[in-house]
Length: 398
Image 1 (tube, helix red, strand yellow):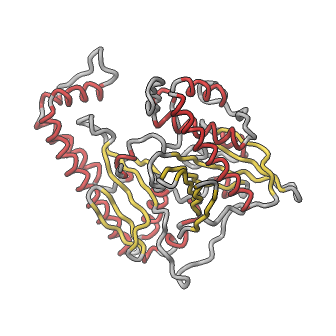
Image 2: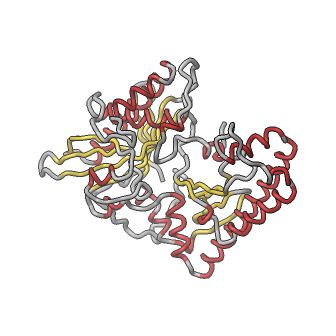
């Protein structure tokens, strides 16, 4: 089974896509890249929600329509891979439709659009937002049949062949790794360059895409030296995690709760989108994953699900564990920030981190909990829908 750090290297969890990242082999079953798998999932979910017709907008950054992107990617992969992707997307669309109909019983779905590039979400909601502020892959517009009220539903779509519904929620740079991360990383790089002078002298050659590619070639040609660098990498990541956790815990102890809570919101993407705040939209993260029981789904509402925890920072504690920072509420883990390097194959890779939230949240004592006020009537119930043998089972979480 893949670990969380393995999943961080996969592209399906990203909130944007790039056709240039697609490296597919149509002659091999399983030769489909995670990037292509994720893009086709978005396009096909939209298609099935749109009465089996491709969305007519918006074009991607290459001026290609949703159907054109779909057809191009479909031609690049094996038919059996496409069948699996299509099946998961159809199941996901069914789950999303049921969720909207259950939460808004008087609403009828009117329109579905693909929001793959900057500015697309604003075209739907009328509210400006960066892709970080609103990571919706598709927007579904519904209309109340009685009142005529229109509501937009943004969905960030995730798909995985793995059995876990807990996938990365954020990708963060070195500035989110604590105040000592820059210094530790600088020392780490200097140590490598001083010990391996031949690596420090590596230059890009015509056969290389960039300098990083040249360093990767050096690593392949010097496996023993690269193994030693990997050891130093682990030491660095553990140091960063230890210092970062210590710093955050000290802030909690001193009463500097705001900075810690804001940091946790960045890690688990627990922020309302601008359109949610304006009262014109909802936002959900919808994950489709695979277990022995079949295709399953999880719907999360980041701006709501963890509010009772974040409103009680005195009960939050922070601990290091290897290269990760663990966030606990009354002793139970609810979030993780894993520090890593951009690439293990590049011996001088950059430092980054990624966060995830635990789907099963720690219970909050009713005496601690304030009533949550939500925006634009969002669905406040996170659930897992299990599709098995034609029967659906919804399980409430948290």
